[in-house]
Length: 541
Image (tube, rainbow, N blue to C red; front, side):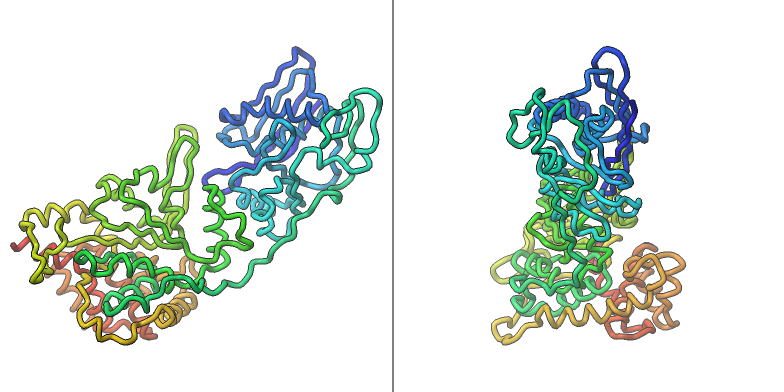
């Protein structure tokens, strides 16, 4: 006897369709699960056995072979329990599922037959929709997440007994009576399920328009002065450019960056689905949320984080902080305090916008398109170049150079905006400060221009320009090109820094609603390469 149902699992953050094949044959009673299962799947035999017995059915006393296809793909997690249990019941003739309805089964079984939630349901349901399935049957706790995907029926159950229609609950035969109050099927009775209409169907929530930012979000009106830094943050938000703020303690670096989400453009529907998939795979999606995530993520890991915590990994690989910051902001406060090894793993994701985690039997790919925002002090004591009557720098030039050398040159090259933030002056006399709403208006203007310009291309931000596309959309006139070439020679900039300045110039021109990049736009972009200038000055000391 042979049967086949469909389940799914996660591969990175994407769902993968798995065929759950069941074969019953004569021989000594034993159960084998094949197809590269992990320990959680191998242990499913005992969970399924107990759940079937406690729901009044009979576990087959034959030689049972369960194959998870494709056989060369490593399977992990407990999402196959429900498909395995129903595969055994249908193959042994105890349950007949609806004919002509292609259904995906997802869920972990408890010993009493209860259905427990699993991670990554959003990706699995999205896969089922794209593969042409009619419906998905999954745990009740995952219903709010699954209903975000439209045009597919979602049936949510909390117990294996929910599958049995009410009229079958009322019938029975003298033998094999069940003691569990939730299950009244009998071992000798065949349960025929003509349709799933008796099951509760989750109502879909259409993808809503982006909501306004929360009213309790921190606002830039709280920051007095620092107009230069606010201008740089507007540029960073408008083009999704990486930014680094350097200044003495108490200058407002952290305060400025933590308010950056308040001026970012909203997520598009495609971006919302991407971000929610990442959080679903990581088990961090909030069930109370009625919609896809609409606010760009903001992640601020502590400097003691490991490389695996930052990029992802583990025995069962999970997304790291850079993937949780996908389409949002990764904030590294006090950058030199992070381990050199941890910082260096950022170099490849900053260029490729994804991270690849290799294992002996599988390779996982996680998205990592984020805006890197970082802050640091100019030296160990924090007052180099910012001496006052009360505070003076006690660090030697060698100590300053050693402190800054914790951040490698290749990593600095990948940060577009590098500027110094000084202590604000005359802030007591300032009556009004530039608010987040004012700054966000500028950002949205530049964002709209980029969306129109790159509408037929696979990217939509100036920071993603490279190669031929960069030369096409960031054309300099002769004066601007000469200025940039002279700066390259004076500061000894790399070709990567040259490209970063071009991208910045393109964004600054968009903020001014100018299609042409002028000398003033290039000059402003050059002044944001503060660390290059600082390195040149230190080398002369």
